[in-house]
Image (cartoon, rainbow, N blue to C red; front, side):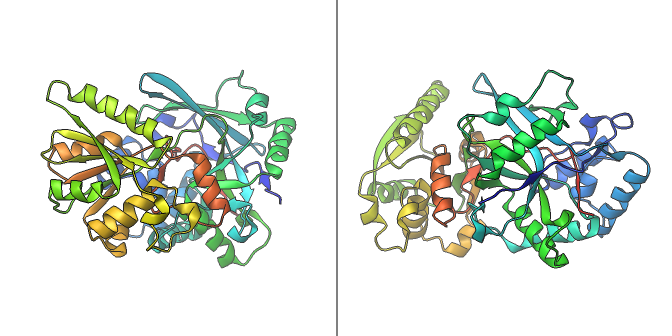
Length: 424
């Protein structure tokens, strides 16, 4: 088992010609049309013009812009192969958190090798879109997000951060991204050696990874640049945080009918609030949810026109509950498996197609938004999920299965515009 990692033949913004603050952007799949317009306005060289062009033929337009920016030294090639080390600093409940990782290339592996493991399912539309962009521009503009395990933290301990950062930029979410160039062969060799016997789990970017596979297959090559893909690597043993994706019911449901359905399977504890103490009650409710989830399948429920939060703790044996469904044992321990099979499908009557299409049900990453949609009357019920455990994701992936749709949210997102990986 070998995971092959190489430095990048990197293309980067020429910071003598552009302000890096004006050209970076989040990944294409979290940019709304309105936000794209805003990013367009910041600079004629914003990376959004490559990753999400608004032109009638976006792929040809991106290719033309890319070539033009290279010709006019807006984008330049680094002098030597490089790995970029990234610190992402942000505030979580008053505490500063720093996620560390690095951007390099890795050899594209078919999932059958078990060197790189997926954990979620993908959809065909985004893959076709990204493949068309790759064919037109012959480059990776965004990274795959890979997670590996190294309890000894060899890379974190070896990287020298005493020099001046190559990039120091704060994004629109208030996340400070500090990027250092690693060019010395000794550190690059250490990184390659540490990763050589690891298994990597795709945390985010499943569509982009499968696009890279499809592009390699389209070219029919086993060597060359297209046999590698740009990825960001982070160590799961370095206090990696994973955020949940909450389930929001937008089609009408009678609150107390839903509550009675839930009580068939869960013990229910309610947290009644008034306007004055709502925030403090909510805070305690979320603390208790995380505590409960350490020991048993637990989730929260918040419903429109009901001044209560509900903590749901699975009462019955999970095997008995899921007995009528063909659920592999390794997936039975997931809160989302129980929620989707028993409550959303069986009790609320959602079909699999409706759940995939988000018809009457939404998947919301931002916790406050899951509560706000109820308060603003935009939804009927919110199922508040506990933080996922990386150990569960790894265990399920290694067993050859994938998590339910929209299970995890790795925050902060990786910036587009830090580096480009050419494929020719």
